Image 1 (cartoon, one colour):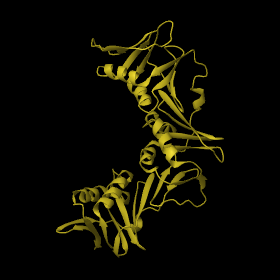
Image 2 (cartoon, rainbow, N blue to C red):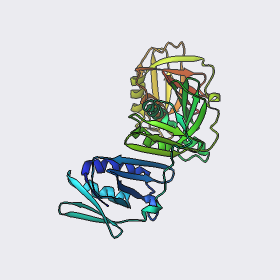
Image 3 (spheres, rainbow, N blue to C red):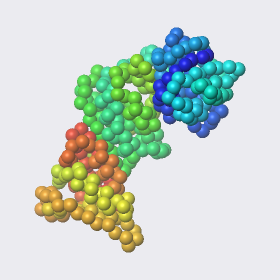
Image 4 (cartoon, one colour):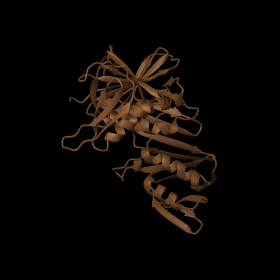
Length: 355
């Protein structure tokens, strides 16, 4: 194989492919990026078996067709070090050579035949949804998804497709976020997308994309790339039971003022006691030593008497920094019960800290 390609174009693709590589076992073929030059197209693939990404590049000069593999991290480091000029990739005696003018690098290859095949869309259902909107919706609830919960189904986003809307749900057991995406749907079904895959989806879902799925896999295709992720096999908890059905007090609050108040006391602690009075909202740090931080904002809450709640700063900030509207609704029942924060299609239920 021998190809010539623009350095920036190659770097962009190799950089995007790196999160998909096997990081722990460098002897595995999946720690390598797969490169194939054929029929005027340069294919570049990366996968750790759980998620995968493949690019098709047509703006390349293919001098000799063929295949190669190379350690993805080392290849990226090399490409980054080069000047913004044409780069040549060439295979010789089980090595991949990266050349630019007087500079030359050599990386050992593994057997390209051992590189795993990507799943195909054959016999899979088509998911009729605006991919850009799906990507944005997943971003809204991303921070609420757990990371290493022994209940594997909580380490992903639950996509609950109903008639004419989709609920996108994430929870870490201390909070639960639901984003309702109003959209025509063909049938009712559900699936769980792993958190790692969602992080990559947000970088990709900004173009015309077709999405396919079955019980185990989700595939997204565009003209230039193909993405796949294994789905989480499990039963997601009944999230509707977590959402309070009745709310005693509803306050319309300022997003920016609440962010300012929480950030002021967050210098001293990870949690805050928020006191809502008729004309003010006060913030007090929750700490075990004698240090203290307090602030308040003038804000007409419409309350007749004080109410308070203890909360982890991050939980409220994650919600507030994910909404565009200037105001949001705070739903309160009791200081020891879950409260809600909501804005348009996004609602988060948060368990308070007992004070």
